[in-house]
Length: 267
Ligand code: ADP
Image (tube, rainbow, N blue to C red; front, side):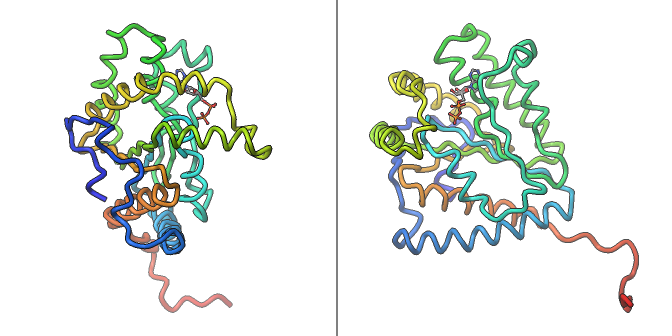
C-alpha cells in the first residue's frame, strides 16, 4: 500500500493519480469482498486489543469530494468493530460557538483517548479546503494553517496518537454518476444536497486545494494516502489493509493480570 502514501513534501498533481486504479489487488470483486471480510475480522481483534491495552490512541481522518464515499468507508471498513472504543466525529459547518474559537478548538476536543479509535468524517482540513475555496477567511490566514496543522498533529503523535489520513480520490464522471444515483433512488434522495451541484462546479478549485493539502501536510507522523475510490470495493480494501498493517505494527498485547491467576477456579 506504500505506493498510495504521499511522501513528505511530494508534489502532488491529482491528474497523475488514477482514481480507477486496482493494481494492488489481483482478483474480482467477489474475491475482494471475501478479503475485506477477513480484514474486518482482523480489525475487530486488533481494536479489541487496542481497547484492552489502553495505551495507544488511533485517529483516522477521512477527506474527499462530495460522494467520494466517506460514509461508505465508515460502514464497510469498520463493520463488526466494538462500538465501545470506536467513535465517529463528523465536522460540519461550524456553529457560532465554534466560529468564536480557533479552528482547532472543536477538533482537539474530539481526538482519541487511550485505547480509543476515532474516525474523523471531514476534519480540520476543511479549514484549508472549503474555507479557502469559498474565501471564508483571507488567504494569509488559511496559508498559515498548513504549518499549524502539522504542528498540531505532531503534538498528538508525540503524545501517543497514531494518525492515518485518507483522501478518497474519485473523478468528475464518478461523482456525476453517484449524484444522479442519489436523485434516482427514493431511498437515497435524503443524501442529495442541492448545494452539491454548486460545489461540483468548483471542482478545479477544490482539486488545487487538495493538492496543496497533500503536498504540505503529509508527514512522517501523520501521512496521507491517496486512495483510488472510483471502485468502492477497492477503496475499502486499501483503507482496511493500511489500517490493519498499521495496528499490527503497534505490537500490542493484552495486559497481564495484576496478580497470579493460575490455579484459580470459580466455584
Ligand atoms: P457530508 O457532505 O459530509 O455528508 P454535510 O452534507 O452535512 O455532510 O456537509 C457538511 C458540510 O460542512 C460540508 O459542505 C463541509 O464543507 C462543511 N464544513 C465542514 N467544516 C467546515 C468549516 N470549517 N467551515 C465551513 N464549512 C465546513
